[in-house]
Image (tube, rainbow, N blue to C red):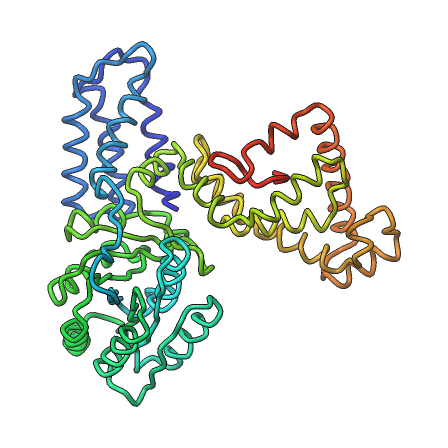
Length: 455
């Protein structure tokens, strides 16, 4: 996320050294580079001008304290202004209306509205304990209704049936009546998209909006479209008065232009961001946390929340108790830990939330880790239960069978077994020295990582 912008800004901010004070002279070059970095990130020109001017106004004349360098002072100012630009704080959904609260999703085709509808339903169901009903009013895209129905079934979320023979307004009206009768807390309506903003599309979304009177009208947009995202958001807002924005595909957005421009240009808050393909990969948007990530300062709060929400605490406690009693850490346990790591978005997702890690490092680790995790799981999956519990029984013929079954080479199997043997020794030493207890002390609570996490 924001790799290009993050790396450029960090390189620029490190250059301001050896000065006792920030002046217009010694800040001129860093500000010019910040301006270039923002423009290359596809941030809207008016936004760039205002942001750079505010940074200059806030930073010039700032005394550099003994504990800080000019670069650190400028980082603080840039962090403050980036946060202000994106909206200061998280803006939650307003679901305080008489149930069912209707949430209408709008946007262009390909932005990920249908997947986002399912992700949002899961988010509200798990995080807000809401009874949610999903319905698709997209009667144009082939299989759009089937897609949402299957997603709802996989997530155990209620779905109201519709068909391509019905009109979108009719679908929405029927779903609202059903939601009232069955006492649903929230009704999420997925609407049709187009390849571009057109009059027919706007007339349809206006009719839907008027029919259901949603408490939230959210514009779903692909973050990688940059300034085009801002322009289309403005067009939709003029038609149906948007209450917020959901930026999708943020995990693939190396620039960040949409995130940094959309609030300032449209006045509409970013409420959620999509950070992956899994149905749990939807995060509430916190401007201060995103600004910290951009500047390489990490986002430990979000990482802790991820651990609390996405890690199977029962499995984590089970492994922790097992290790504390001196029992052997098996390949089955190892596979469980990899799956826990994947639930957190992978190594790269975790790394970018830790202070000091560069965006480039996080992206590289994500690519390497995903490939390695898949290979490790395939190798372990090709073993028998006995082999997973007692790797010592794996001889040459068994290695050849495991390699064939997992589509890997014998040397890959040997490498895994060697690394795993080293890990077992390390954990045994840590337990004997009391370090294991300290490593597992945060298990299940704020600030702790999942028990037995091998990385």
